[in-house]
Image (cartoon, rainbow, N blue to C red):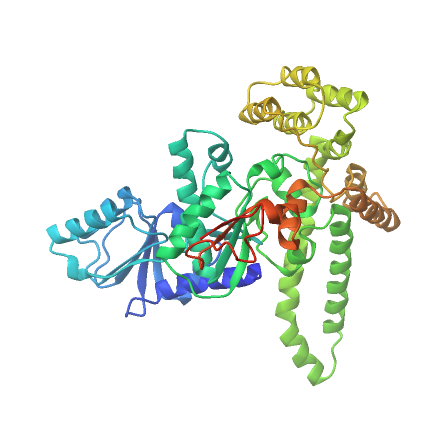
Length: 504
């Protein structure tokens, strides 16, 4: 199912929630958690079109609004439940009240809410009390389960803390599956954190059955891709978030949303984006010229119809032109082309590369964050322990370095393939193109280099493992199989081949 479908389904869920009141106008009250669910999907005008005249923060100092129905959309926790009871006690809203939680309200909190309403003789005022199961955020072409510190929590802590972490993740996966209306066939590595998440998700699905198509859901541990967030990438969208300040769908103060240009070029190499930006702008200018020269009445009518779409497209592309220029300035300051090039050669584990890493870690021109990322990636390769120790001694203590040391102590070194998006030199070519210093032929040559490098990169362990699961390879035999439709594993089941763990 496409991401646009996921966004539309999540939007439909929120629209249904907001349509519950019988009055045409209502007040929406949400906490920061639920605001982060709503904001990528519904703008202020989108809320207004759905009858929301006011949208207020639960923890703000709110004044009463009599006679207007109110919709509470808040996270299911004790603080929020008590705040709702306080609002009712203060009689802030005298019309009907509708309360929605994005995940299941635990039984103790349900009892707290019920007792509070009963003590205020306000049970009849609450017309709706519902768990919506939409506890995730859509962001660009991804979904975010909004679990803070998930990396650290998934690799450390006590057994109880690990179970609590997996419980939170499985609850949010239930929301995702509920919105998509799909029944998962879950595959996980055996005896892993992801296996525990699969177990808890399977139990939740049995308590909250979903109707829909059956699709594979592969849950992997970070072990298969331990350095995924540390590489210095050179394709467009990851690079924007790396070098420009960004949160949600805003990067560098620009709302990039999910427009046509981003869908086409978001994960292409920087040179391709530079050339594409220029090509699209030229096309828009040619279309503008045709509209200006329209002479016939029919042509004028067509021009009037096409002009708004053309202007929206031009605005989007020009915003990306500004982002490209801003990104290139940061790319130069942080010397990212050099880092991309160096990281692409780490797999050789040669003395020459080791010395280059040392020189970068000693350099005063490289930021501490970039040094930590390079050292962590390098430490996960097969360099000698004394070399890795010398690198880490140049840096302050950090959780990521501790993680690398733990993996090395357990002999869990990996030699991941470098990012396949581009070579560092291509970024320099792109920089010249953006700033007007390199011709189109050089940019095209950079694009050809990218294609050649893609052929050399090889597959990461994660990519290979997922492919093997889907195509009947080694992992397909070894990984656990969780199927909510199976009450008990069957010995004669075709999926229950030797070496495979099948669970209901």
